[in-house]
Image 1 (cartoon, each protein chain N blue to C red):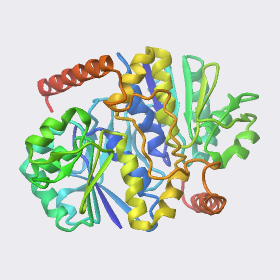
Image 2 (cartoon, rainbow over the protein chains, first blue to last red):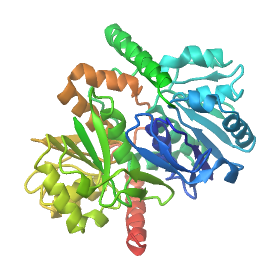
Image 3 (cartoon, each protein chain N blue to C red):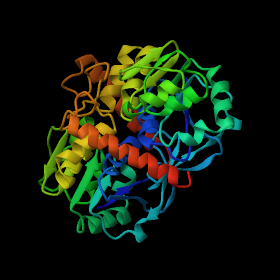
Image 4 (cartoon, each protein chain N blue to C red):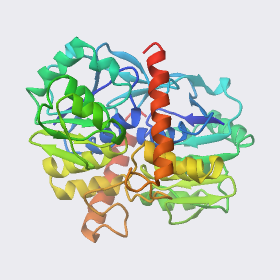
Length: 217
Length: 217
């Protein structure tokens, strides 16, 4: 299985490395980190970098494509990126997104009339791109798999391992990563958070988005 | 809060980027990725790279130090790395590890007689380094916080945010990351996995360790 993880400046790194850490365990899997131009990729926090080892021009196919979220306006408005996604999608067994990665897939025209999810704060944008926003941790429509915000990429990848390598392989991956979640609270979704917290976090996310559009991404 | 995340060739990247993604949300936090020598850092899978922006010589203190796991023999046997860890530890408010990062902290002599955890498959090594291996997702002993395997770094960091910035800040981080885990199985710890799976995965981990010692790490 050739797994291709797309990177871009402004990426939310856990969206990419959560699935990576799970999928790498799949027997015989190879993983390529690919960006428009290979080299250093700045994180959305601007506090670090990861590395893309391949440029779009060097990768023409994938068994699994993973599109992480982040400051998604960048790739959403880049024709070369959207063309590359469409080209790779034609070759995939699974085309997957994490968090606002689904907005990029939507911008590529690949979610028209399709049930999909995204970070909970971005359902309106997802809808505007032609998708049918659907609540859920992992939403599957044929070979298109979309996951909810950030950490949901781990759950998505465990499902992928089970679908592709069998349930025992998925359970083995879970045990290797000691993925026995014990968050100290239970406010990881809009339905579980208090109304006050939800309002406060929604305002904070809007503020972050505003700051981003004022910077040089 | 200055957060310093140590990197090294052979790092398990989710150990580092799980906590990063949570801690970056803390108000006023800055994060530095630091390695013996700055530059590209190869992942334990050898299928990608991240980047250290600072060398040890450029970082003399930290409020929170995060030591991720991975192919830990590398830093465990490097005097310069252990000296640096001891120096930083003197300045920290929290010294933390994820997965086999605790073995590195143990090798630095900082876990003598202290209750600590690690990846479940490495309790024996943890014991040989003077620590008291203790089952638990996140184990706190004063300012030393150790987390279990790989994914436990996310839970650890949520606790850290709550301790340092308050419980509401921790809940907000959880909501921002949509950390509402829904793994498709329940085999994320040795106690929850079937005996057959546990045996199979233990053998696989031993095989991986053997392969690593035969390579050029």
